Amino acid sequence: MNILILGSGGREHALAWKISQSHHCDQLFIAPGNAGTAAFGTNLSVSPTDFLALKGACITHNINMLVVGPEEPLVKGIYDFFSTDAALQQIIVVGPSANAAQLEGSKSFSKKFMRRHQIPTAAYAEFTAANYEEGETYISNHSLPVVLKADGLAAGKGVIIANTTEEALNSFKEMIQGKQFGIASEKVVVEEFLQGIEVSVFALTNGTDYQIIGHAKDYKRIGEGDTGLNTGGMGCVSPVPFMDEAFMQKVEETIVKPTVAGLQAENLTYYGFIFFGLMNVNGTPYVIEYNCRMGDPETEVVMPRLKTDLVGLFAAMDNGTLADANISFEERSAATIMAVSGGYPGDYEKNKIISFPANAEQLKDSMLFHAGTLQIAENIVTNGGRVLAVTSLGSNIKEAAEKSKAILENVNFEGIYYRKDIGYEFAC
Ligand code: AMP
Ligand code: GLY
Image 1 (cartoon, rainbow, N blue to C red):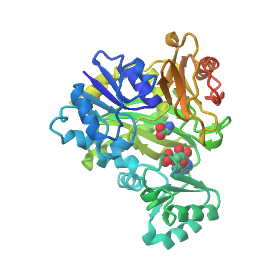
Image 2: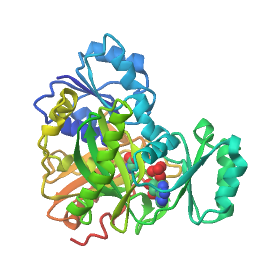
Image 3: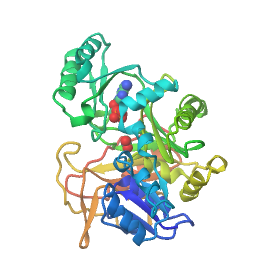
Image 4: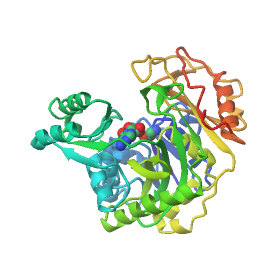
């Protein structure tokens, strides 16, 4: 099978690494990819949202399967574009239809979906300019902290956790009246703050059956000890010691099964990954958000532990045999540490030359995934805030994290920063 992966981050490098190991995979292409994905396939300089250019690339390269990394093309309807085009219909698309991708693309849609299917989530109300005063009253009477969410995609910046009513009212005004996130914040979800530990669970589904392909805990803050600004993710660990069988059983029974049943009941066409962003509130899981794709850097920690052939799973998803698939996991623990550009998540510089460890090609229990990198002549340079993700396997989280750190000590570029405490709560 010829396979095209869309995207250019660490997630796509990890997917390329995993997919290239499948005996189902003949030729692999990545659009646009990065300096790391080029080692596993051919990078194509096509944007993941330029559907017409992607159509041309699929025809030229006889693509049989399209694996969509980021959410934007999904929310913009890439599944529907492929399934309704006579020249593309035969291609297996891993990613939901635009309707179903609203689970990520619209907070209001996902909250209503959860309410309809009694899926545990924070209590909420939603407001627009039409009921603005009602929203002010609701916020003024709300307990603190209170969470405000722009309805639409806002590049990961659309969530405000306000500690005072004044801050909440100001953010509300900024979002609705100030159009802070354009049309994405014309509608705002105001919800209860859930106190707990955030974790994520990943499933592959065809809208009828599902398989859980991994779980992780990510470290979102820039600073050690979980301090400072939020980022796209500074590291991850898997498996998570407290996500034991009893907890995962609750996740499946109260969240995963009702979600898949809800998709089916509402005829929402869904072939692809579901990322359940959860809050573990004293042992009870609640949904914080759905994403209609894999996470980054969660993919970098989940893929190295998944022993099952991923392309085989995609084929099973497509041909209705997903329920019979055998999923097996690497016994060892994995820890991913993300190296970022100085200044991230604020302003940062690009084009810094990266030097790699001498044995980067033959690491034993570790993988070095590129995120924001670019090959320029003989150099690989930084090309984003999140630059590289190093994942290692170890007999426990501590050992895995130590191995990833040891590798990062031999990676260098001007301004490099990474958290040295990933997995700190798990001493073994
Ligand atoms: P989201 O964009 O929905 O992922 O939200 C961004 C982050 O805000 C999440 O990863 C959580 O850390 C936090 N968050 C969102 N909703 C809540 C909530 N109801 N209670 C506590 N934290 C939340
Ligand atoms: N790491 C969070 C995400 O991919 O959305």
